[in-house]
Image (cartoon, rainbow, N blue to C red):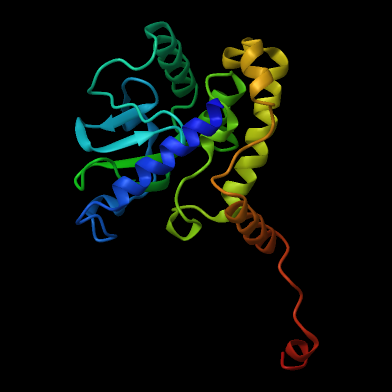
Length: 225
């Protein structure tokens, strides 16, 4: 129930945000490019800002907690401290890491953007490490928007989905973080990464597979080459 309730909460928030006036693609915050991860200051939960700019809220998860760093506490302080310490240590070990925008949309205001990012340093991913250490489940790394509205490809998200599933199973086997709670494990079988709807997931899988395995040219196409 935990994952399902988070999913509907996220979808509801997105519909509310996307229906705000003046939130079209012309918004300046849609002009996003990868930035050095070291420029982001992390606040409560998984939200960060750059140079105190509160119009762009960078977040390490796609779905799940929609915490605002400037409002009241929504998570236990010990958990927040553990998250912050882990993120800080990872970034210290990866000084050249890059924050790659994945999706962005207005967040309760047409002037504030919620930006889901992947923090990468070569093959190393902070997002996946958060799953591997049991801070979040793998479904938290999935996206909310349509594939055509993402800043990354369907194949990249599909590849991440596979890695998140493996990382989640690894964390559950070691009973780390959220997986130390037996009732949570019983309610959320590890390795089953959610996506908003079965139809969308099927489409997503087809898109990703077509990119991975492009169809060979037809006989007529070959003759015309």
